[in-house]
Length: 317
Image 1: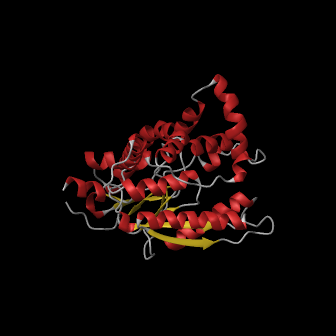
Image 2: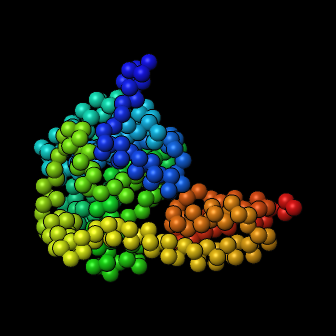
Image 3: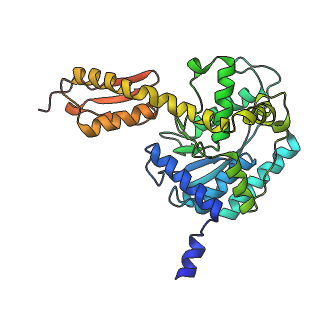
C-alpha cells in the first residue's frame, strides 16, 4: 500500500518540498481556496521559470490542483522560428510525461511599433493577455491561468517603474492576481527556481535576449543589481517586498474610511467577520470577490475602489 501511494503521489526533494510549501503559503495568504477549481492553464514558454512551475504543480501540486485539471499553454511569439519549435516540443514532452493537457498558439510578430505597444516585449505581453482573456473566465474553457513571474521579476519591475517615474501611475509592482491570472511564484527567488531545476534534472531553454544588456531586464539583472548588491546585499528582496509594504501602509487607515462609508450607506455597523474580510480585500488590492453586507447589499471591488450594490433591497431587520 505504501509503495502504491508513493507511485501515485511522489514526494519532492528538499528544494521541491520547500518550493511547493511556499506556493501553498502564498495562495493562503492571498485568500485563495485550495485546491483550485475548474480547468487550469499554466503558461509555459520553455524557459526555466515556467518549466519549473509546470513540473512542480504537475508532479507535486495535488494540494493546489489535481493534474487532471491542468493544461500547459505554450505561446510562440515567432521571434525565433527554429528555437520556438524546439521550445514548443519541450513543453509538449513535459506535458506528456506528466499526463497533463497541452496546447500551443502562434502569435504573429508585428513589423514595427503598433498603436498599443512601444516595443516587441510590450506587444508580446499584450497579446498574451488577449489570449488569456479569450481562454479563461466565466463561460470560457478554463477558469484560471498561472504564470511563473517570481520575486526577482518583481524587484526588476519596481526598479523599472521607479526609474521611469511610473510608480504612482501604474502601481508599485506585479500583482499576485490580475483578473483570471494568478502568479504563485511571486514570493519565490530565481535561485530557488534554478535549484529545483537542478534537483529534478529539468531541461529548459535559455532565451538569448536575457543576456542582451540593451533590454532593461537583462541590464538590471546582469549589471545594475550586481553593483547595487555590493552595497545593499538584500536589495532584490527589499524591492520585491515594497509593493506589499506599500499596500499594507495604506490598508489600515483606508479600512477605517471605507468601513465608515459603508456603514453610513447601509445604516448599520459591519460585523467583525465582515471587517476582517474588508481588510483582506484592501491588502489584496481589492481584486477579490464581492463582500456580502447586512440587509442584502454587496460591496463589489471595481478598478478604482469599491461599489455598493443592492442598497434598494428592503431592510431585513
